[in-house]
Image (tube, rainbow, N blue to C red; front, side):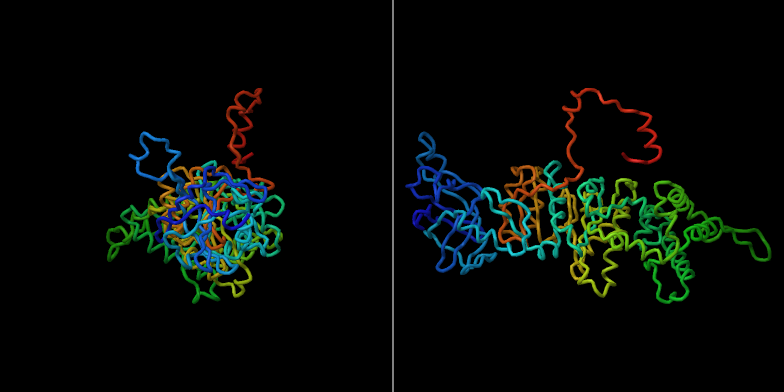
Length: 542
């Protein structure tokens, strides 16, 4: 078919983001056959080409309509009116190379042509040399969506979608494509224990209660959030004394480097010793001059509630992995723990840390501790450029909130630092969430790549539109109509923003919905209450 036979209309209106195209009056049917394949002219999310001299502007169809004011349409056959489409300008072909951005804007009356598979294949294959494809491009059968994996994993990623849109399968699918490489380092903070099944072959599977994260791993912000209630009148005194006691205990345990130790240095200290000193100050009485009547010490009664919280943590079985470590009882343990977190001892490339057994009131601190440990490791790693790490934050809205409270600031502060500085030290983030509007805007605004599945909440849709470049905002109108497992991919790693039906992971994560009706109508499968209660007592999940 000649180039003229691909002609579909002319530009009748244009601004810096989009253009309106009046379609040729000769177009009666919107179906056109090219080389034996039928194309649907004006199909939403399809592409058109607008030549501007030696440059070709590529645009995506975002709207189709009949032209003319409403009153003109009344009392007549609307199908007789001219057709027009609204297209989003997304990039330029200069020579044979596709570039993001508009090199030269078309003017009024410029010709617009449909783009067939042959025209688009070179664009879709822009990063084919890497061989990293995440799925099939919607509307272009057989065309794979290639990404530049260096720009994808080397910059922060936001993977977003409503419940049931396929977030977990998308995460598993993408990461399974890099799990076999010998120097891959991915750490998934798995809130619901979904990913062990997906990475059973290459995964370094860790239950947080088996890992043991000793209390002395915490920095001072994490200690303060764990032990101190900022609403108490004595919170300032508690904070001051906690800092002094912990720092002195750390220095006493490692006198050979005590001049170098700070409150945040991951060095062992005795929490029982710190507690005992708090107890002393809380009950201290000072004898009067000459043996007279005693009086209350300066901190008398100010630490009673702090002691109750300390005792609650230290005696609660759920916190034993932090406050009663069985294996890691000295400062050298940090070497073994980091080795295990990265899977360096087992040569497993994707670490899945199961946080499902962590008490809700401490998830925030654990996430902060794990993320900060990874960041700090590479911060001090001279070979950080040879040891890049991807941190995956599942259900991130639970602990990286838009509006933090005094007791859930640690994780948000840690991940915001990684979002701002992590790339310089070889640490990037994948933020996974079903409620992006509840997430820290600071973190999401640092993401350069968005894999956005179906989002049905208008607040979430509008929030995402604010974060992506203006020229791509209208493309997110598709979000409510995406199929399960289909995503809009926008960012530095893709040549042009497209809808992609993501590959299904093999094996999949353990995130499938329970089919209630099928289960209800099935023959009875007895539940043994005593077995369930026994596991409940023993804190063993089936």
